Image (spheres, rainbow, N blue to C red):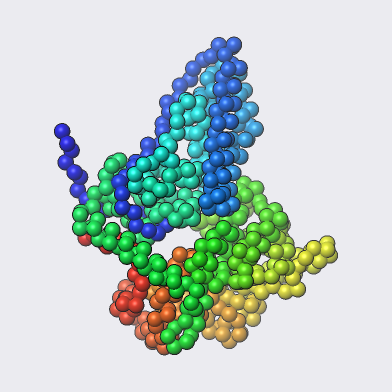
Length: 574
Ligand code: PEP
Ligand code: MG
């Protein structure tokens, strides 16, 4: 008997890689291999140990294959994601403890691995530190892979996908993601994860439309059901109506045409029709994104978040050479465009590292970013020395996050200068002077912007944190303080990635905006179709309105017709 089709429904998650995918669902069953304790005879013990070794060798081959593919298709930064899993496999204590357990307990390899892995996971889950807890995900993935190899069964082979499918899964490991057949896997709908999860970063580098954080999608969707995934809006429509499907396909077609048009403008300046030039720069997390940035028309990197370098080396710390090589590579890939390296901003809700755990219970509000660096000058100096050596060849500026007080800038400058003298004394290269900027992302910094402006070469307003910590800060005050001191002021919060907000910010006086690379073409499109006077008037009008809804309405009313408005599915009314 045929099941009646289920009614259409829509799930909302977080769009992490733009694009519209229309296809059918492939719900991935995370394989649950049943693991039993089986006693083995003494003479079978060597056989169990060699089964274990063969399985580990197979897993390593699979992971290295995934690493090579990631390297070819997405670059070194993405390939490193696999290093963590290879490290777990190579961990001598995992092999030793498992082998010992097989010998001592006379049990099968499956049971011995499971016991050892469970002990590891228990230790990891006991920590409050999310960076370490996330390693539990890698350990689980490696465990599933080992069990699969021991069982002799194939891992669900995503490279064999034959028709256009949207993968629906609780999680999708970076290795699976890289190995999938991208000709046929056209979208990813993932139940867990956030903006900065490895899956999200790789999906966007591979340009596969993806939505993460889709709570309940596994129970809401069955394999074969029709899906429309909108990686920009973060929506997944299940069994959509014919009309919605047709209009989404039309939106996808228009988005393709529009992307071509926007990219044709990418090397034109972002200049308003009355001649005011705005610099559009990129926010990056990995040097490999440099090509995406220049491809989108970025005039430089306004924010390189060096935390990712720390995360890639976690649980160790990057060496001075790691810093130098990463910053140099970025400068060269972007050359002759300028690049701003932001010093370590571990902490906040996005980035954790075990080094924080020792220092601070609540790094979101407490010892994060510059505060942490001034406490752990040993770590800060390694970063600054690496930076200075890279900056000796030009193209780089330094930016310090989470400033709240002038004293922090003075101390950071002093340490920078001491590192510079130290390098020169060692016969190593260091520039005479590097531009140093401060992020204005705390209400405290915004309030003393005039004092800070005398100590730095530029400001960059970080609206992500500023909005988070206080909605009642007058950003116009920061711009005024910077102008009075004659320094540059830019903005690098995600707010700039929304064309309407970008226009409002230009109206408030900003002339430099840094954002994720994919947002640059649309922002440029709008700015090239307005006058600066019109935006100034709009900003004045907006500031007099009672709330954000009214401001949004005003911006839409005045600017909607000139927006590129690319590539999102129409919203279906319930
Ligand atoms: C900000 O706070 O606006 C910012 C750009 O920094 P991050 O998002 O890395 O905290
Ligand atoms: Mg910030």
